[in-house]
Length: 466
Ligand code: MN
Ligand code: MN
Image: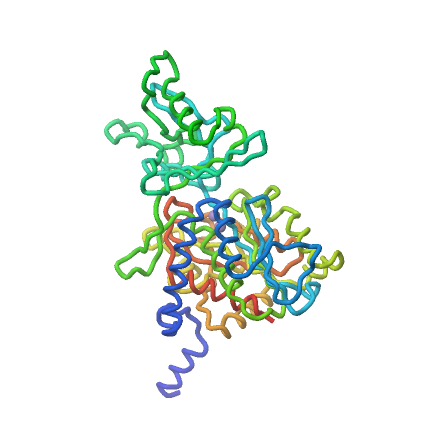
């Protein structure tokens, strides 16, 4: 064979993924920036699942979405949504074909790791007022100390009213923090493992240190001062914490990262980066899709998708049954396809030893497709069939989507899962895909802009998949 023949043989027969920036068109480069600017704006205002629902609904309503009314039915092209208890939401654009012939589900989650307040959070110790917290999701506890935190959530009162709380995002607001020990006195702490150095009961949040003028009482002066400030602002008493849902999240802004501004740093990319990627093409859909296109933004993924707002809830089944007009829900599921959009672990050269380089998601190589997740011997995995992966390869390649196939890390290094299994359990063909993330679950995570954009493009192509 000639030199050319060998070159051609090498290109035809061997496979190696290509860097996204070597592949994308000029048009995509421009659209990438405007898409990421919109995402950054969304993320900055969606720091909890409740805020993500409010923000997503506001954007969707501006794009013509209306609350779904089962009594009214839907016509092809109708844009509808349903909020589940303020914490999860499902958007859909009605297709030309009956839902019993299958729909296209894109399923992401909008909850992120954080510090929740305990039911009786407030206490005073040595004239400092603090909140006890209970962490939510998989966190490395030491990462949550010495970091500005903001307080978000609701106070649900016995009269039925619900007050929204958000303190610490406005530059004029105060913030909160978990203190850490000074190095000078850390001789014992430094001998502990990272898992033990800061414990769950160490994650106490500083909320006050001064008594109110005139209070010369003997005990709980600081605690009382904090409670009086809350009473003045919200009209609540300490007992109202019993029915509150308040969380502390990093009070950090969404920022471009790198001299080339090619990355985005923020709290909560996992999984709002995929949530937005799934919602955006639905909002921009101009023509009725062939199959009804559904975007699910679920809650509670970080703790197992349990409960009424997680994807194991029958709320989705109820919505789909109503869309089916009461008959054919199982047929609908059996002929549907789901793209479970959740973040992947981006290869980090600083910790290269836990990754298997050949099968890792690389930053800027596009949306990361995972045939399976799970741990050890694929335990807990939803393993997509080769046939399904082939359908997606065809769909993504036709739409010029930069994509890569990956695993989380080395086989014995650990593992993880997504909502995929809960969709697959409904007899829906499901594939995992999403944005590769550096520092996943840290208070500040990093993603590549190109990957964010390509995940949106993947969802756009998926909604139109044959
Ligand atoms: Mn996730
Ligand atoms: Mn996660």
